[in-house]
Length: 138
Ligand SMILES: CC(C)(COP(=O)(O)OP(=O)(O)OC[C@H]1O[C@@H](n2cnc3c(N)ncnc32)[C@H](O)[C@@H]1OP(=O)(O)O)[C@@H](O)C(=O)NCCC(=O)NCCS
Image (cartoon, rainbow, N blue to C red; front, side, top):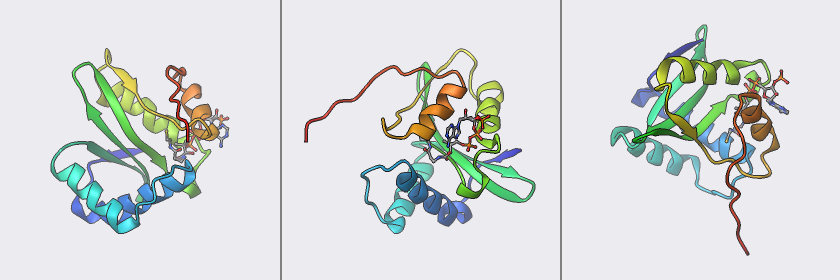
């Protein structure tokens, strides 16, 4: 697996993946792909988040979007393309990020929707533990 920084040429793919991510995790966000594309372009241009695309051979298989804070990494988006799932690629990508990209003494923080069981199982498989449960009344 290889890792590369996204360029403006990747924005259509990243916004499509962002759209799939929102659908797959059953998030309430209803932004259209064109809006997601503008948001993604702004985040990367203003360096509000760093992005990396994962590739296997010539194929892009997923991406991460994160922000380095003072003492931790905030992981905003992590996604493996639907057709490449359950092949260990998500684990491989995360292990590389943890070992080679992010400072070893940094905590990694992320939010997972309670109903996103697949993602919860995934993070648990990497040693992440549940910490905070968000509450709401609708
Ligand atoms: C969550 C996600 C990143 C997992 O990526 P992946 O490459 O399919 O995961 P891996 O193949 O590396 O799986 C590693 C382990 O995670 C767990 N896991 C992954 N997918 C699972 C599923 N559908 N059901 C149960 N456990 C699962 C298993 O323990 C698995 O190990 P195993 O296959 O040996 O049982 C991917 O499904 C995805 O992009 N989902 C949509 C976006 C999303 O929810 N992102 C996370 C937001 S917080």
